[in-house]
Amino acid sequence: MNRFIILYPISLILLFTIFYFDTSIISTTINHFQQNLIIDAIREIFPHRVEENFIIISNNYKLSIDKACNGLVSIIFFIAPILVYKASINYKILAILIGYIILTLANIIRITFITYMVIEDRRNFSLSHDYIGNIFLLMVGIGLFMIFLRYNMKNYN
Image (cartoon, rainbow, N blue to C red; front, side, top):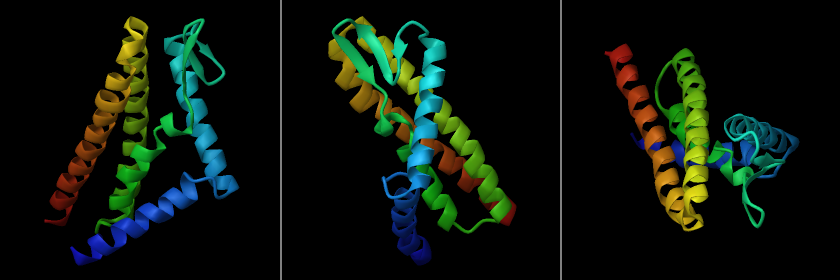
């Protein structure tokens, strides 16, 4: 437990530095890939509303899908504890891959929900984005980590 408490913040810092903050070509490339993946998925859902990295709500109002919306923050918060938790490397890799896919899909659902809420009424943005959408991603990530722990305990017992 002490090992986890010490290594978890270090893992977070390293993951954010390598994969999220604009510190290298690696982080820039990964963020652009993830952002484009999300934009392409949203374009399939709202084909006539997406222009570049914007979702057009009206002539005067649009939502921006930027780096902060690409879902990498929730993915990093999911991956960090897995990396430092005691488990086999194969199990960690499998959990990270499955978690990445599920969290990316959850983020697409979150952005779709926000868009529908804002189309209904622009005043819904803060509620749908800042509260419901972010809590949704947080709960999906926590749920995935709890599943990881549960199956890991079965494998070690």
